[in-house]
Picture 1 (cartoon, helix red, strand yellow):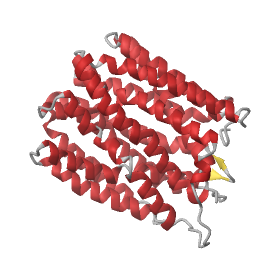
Picture 2 (cartoon, one colour):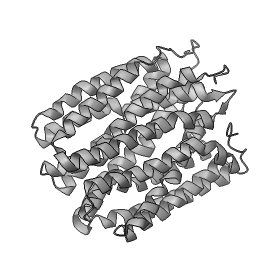
Picture 3 (cartoon, rainbow, N blue to C red):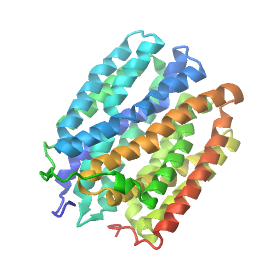
Length: 400
């Protein structure tokens, strides 16, 4: 059932802390993991495979944790376990490991971290959904702390690695996961109500609905287009001669506009329907990948392309969370969020990482962005189908 009480700022502060520390970890780990692996001597294909381990865990871990959290209501306790286990596992990065051993360490670590955001988002969606309406303003104000955390570490790590080298990457991983673990243990130990009824809440009838099916297709291709950024962007910029400081600046540009969007989204989202924003964000992604493929050697064009992140990620993410809250209410919330992670991040991450590695190895890194542009276009067409199935949809709930 949706939350019908008044949610205070004090209740949301712990979730802001979790978001800030988690994305602070992601802010240095994802952009600089490929460069660390490159310094260890791995080739492009090996780097793409190892970075795709994160996506591989998203094929099974989020849904497993989501199912468990839906059936026990113990999202906070599961978050605490996941963060602590990931921290202990990350200590293995301090040792000199074979490629297989390194892959196993990353596999176990990501199995626990990949479940954290779906469970946290599900718990927060429960808090910010009042009377069945998703409160975009409250959600955006909490989520922007994650963007701030990302921004801080992507800047600091870029400058640090530029001056001291990549050898401190494992230490950064451990310290950032320590911050995540502390913030998770500070969450209030709240257990959500679990139905005692013998009636099982099935998820398949929801998945068979045409709008839901097309929504997941759109999400799959939209995120698949992003893999060119998530996995190969730092390597692409490095190959073009950008310094690690500039690599950090370009990553930070996307996060700055992301923060601006999350902070002000309640002013814009009500102007279009949920599904119309889905179309706009996918179309913007098509443009962004085309600009990145063709004009990456022109700094101001690349900065503009990165600025489109406000639409391609921030707007798209809020809309997807709101639609998921609509499609998967109550006992389905955790599994709905987890399915989104599996379908929109797990499969695209695996496919994009491996295929992107083969493409970049044979045709160069630029080819990845032309393919990303094509997948973004497919995502736009799928988003249009969702819009057609929903239209006319009420304006964004809770956006005022």
